[in-house]
Image 1 (tube, rainbow, N blue to C red):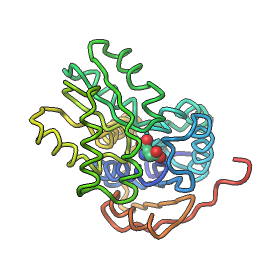
Image 2: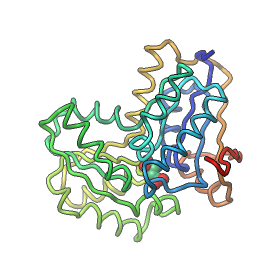
Image 3: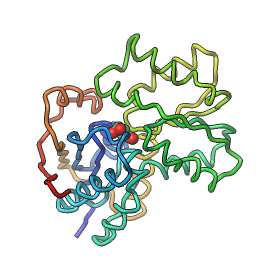
Amino acid sequence: MKTAESPIGIFDSGIGGLTVANAVLNTLPRESFIYFGDTAHLPYGDKSPDTIKRFSLAITDFLLQNKVKLIIIACNSASAAAFEAVQEHADKFGIRVVNVIDPVVEYISSSRHNKVGIIGTRATIGSQIFPAKIAAANPLIEVATLATPLLAPMIESGFVKGDISKAIVEAYLNDPVLDNIDAIILACTHYPLIKKEIAQYYKDNNKKVEILATNEIVAQYVKNLLRDENLISNSEEVEHHFYVSDFTESFADTTKLFYKKEVHLQFAPIFSGEN
Ligand code: DGL
């Protein structure tokens, strides 16, 4: 039986979702959570929807076994490919699932933006889920999408500042498809880590573009949802557990970048031959 003190389950292909976990923690400091990073299968952004769905369902099982009160799919690629399947499965246990797409679509659709750029992995952009949902919610907003597949691996490798990342960020943002946008959605949970660099690009080019990092929007959405369901924790005893499907020292190091503090990663062998 879920209670306000039950943990929130959060997952991503790797450690990008820690930007969401961090934002949730800033907004809801008394929540416990269980984080799962599917580091054995990273990146999701280049996988097929069926494969992403299979991995996401296995992780959902793991989180449900750990008695979470809510699941956050802290990955745009998995949100695009697997949200319905994950929600259908979690429904059997009476558990709500939050993806990182709907809260952002809701936010942008009620804004006054004219043309919105969206950058993300091939899986997210290829799904066309953002243009479809925004068009349904507010057809007056023009949407321009661009797959930026080098960004997540670049960030995973620790290249968030310096000439290499600057050149890659510039090359993508210079793409004419993004001309005349007045907002840009960072539709990958890795990208909040280069928000500053993206802001600098627009500053240097004298362009006024609002940069929307999905982690903060999602954290606010989760707070409202938990409040509506009377599930906000007031507990003094907060526990945060971090699991990965493959463990390397370099991941342990990079985790600090995402979570902004030291994290003890545990190995969870939830994937077997058949899943
Ligand atoms: N964090 C994932 C997302 O939000 C991207 C990383 C990956 O390709 O696995 O889409």
